[in-house]
Figure 1 (spheres, rainbow, N blue to C red):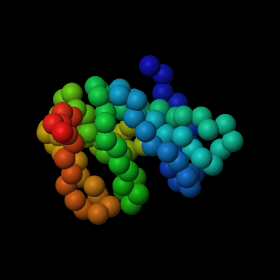
Figure 2 (figure 1 turned 45 degrees about the vertical axis):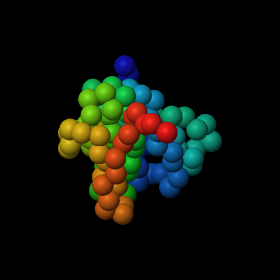
Figure 3 (figure 1 turned 120 degrees about the vertical axis):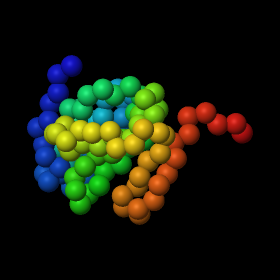
Figure 4 (figure 1 turned 90 degrees about the vertical axis):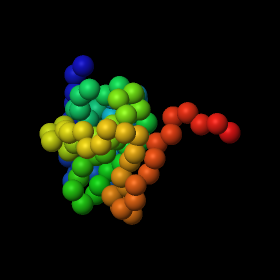
Length: 105
């Protein structure tokens, strides 16, 4: 897989961060072409929850296949698994959230 990361977060004032199961991408709303840019992280199985910490410029995600919460910087450096369970830390409001994949209604 080829990765293209042409914009830094500092260059963006508006963007959408999204997951495509084995890929984390973002679309800049500041550019006319709305091209999605793949964040160069590896080992993704099934990403379902994403967050971005604006102060540290780290991305956080939950992967439900390996039951982990991981983090990395926008350029893919510093990638590491933080927690091995289906929990997610929201750094903005400093709360621990749970990711539920199977739910009985």
